[in-house]
Image (cartoon, rainbow, N blue to C red; front, side, top):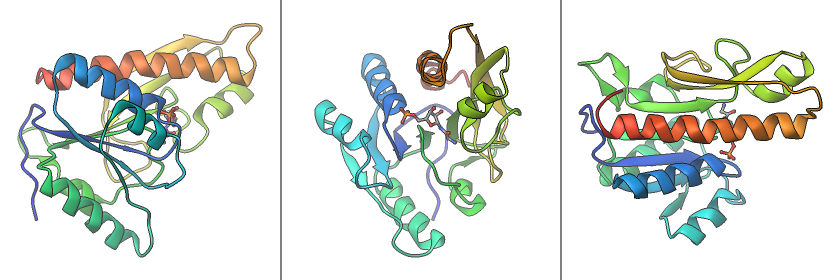
Length: 200
Ligand code: GAR
């Protein structure tokens, strides 16, 4: 099975597992810019992002992992193929995607997968879970967020763009994280616009 690849977005899908503030931001941005959002795939039936989809009238498809990773990914791919999705935007999707899954979105002209993720740190610092928390506990002066192409590693794919913010004297983890999330929203909206315009 192959999914159609071309450089600019024809139809995209969002994948999310949690609260969904980034997903909501992408939904609003895509509406403003007229991009075709096929659906949001969520692997957690109790995720708050599903409430957002309902409120925003976005088609949400719950796809929990009930068997092997391979089977789960095949099920997701079948849905995405049916909807002719050619770009995937991960927004707090908390599962690693396999090389095989990603290969269905491979763009040979640019040698990359048309799958993009946002990560809560200035990669390559703090890959994996808890990016803001670990940075906060390490008392870094600056933290940030990274939008990157997804490869088979843990937050190792080519970086598209990063943004940073300063740790303030009175920050607690909540205010530090909130500043990071606000930055993520600005950054991811900008990248979506660039993808739509074929500039990424
Ligand atoms: C965001 O901070 C996002 O960068 C992070 O999860 C949060 C989701 O928030 N993603 C990862 O850590 C992926 N490894 P949201 O559900 O409100 O968008």
